[in-house]
Length: 244
Image (cartoon, rainbow, N blue to C red; front, side):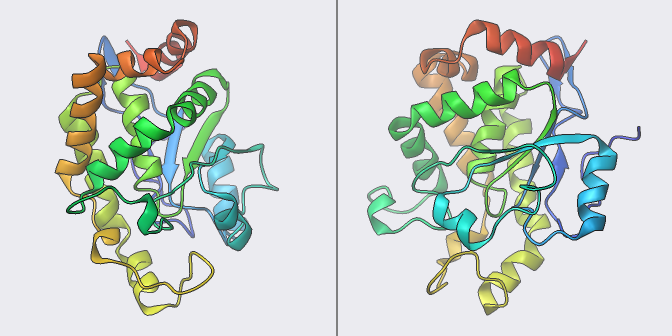
């Protein structure tokens, strides 16, 4: 199998393998976790490309309204798990926003404080499955980004590499963003008047989220342990995700 960082999957532009990052004791293994935007409307060639790569399961991080509006094409093709995070990124309304000047790190920190059980459940699901997993939200940058931070951070990938990986979404999603702006892609029911910040993934946002986790819990792994992810689950994660 030829593994690669960015996958050429028909119908997806932001599909990436989390392998190849230096971490504590080795490097993250390819063929364990994929991240992407929502795989909605994939035709057979896109689904088959993912199967050929070895994908065995998908985790959908979107809310119920989002999944009803745009169902995942993988729901009927592979084992599928719905692990929704309330107050999701592109679909949130004003009451879900942090107070003061907007920045993505505030949103991510607010999610960690309000929904620790979601982080626990999503990370544990990733630790415990034996399948190659693709996890996604709508664009694959926010909810997907904070879960990626937890998985990479748990095995010791650096702050800089985690934040740099997060930044790539803004590059790869330009066509999707253009379609969202002009209305040719509707990701939710109702008006789609997006604020400019929806289309950005600044380095500082993920770096500050990482800093919050490490400053309040000692490390990303410390955060996960404090919210209920078990040592046994994190050891399973390390064994399958780290190549020494």
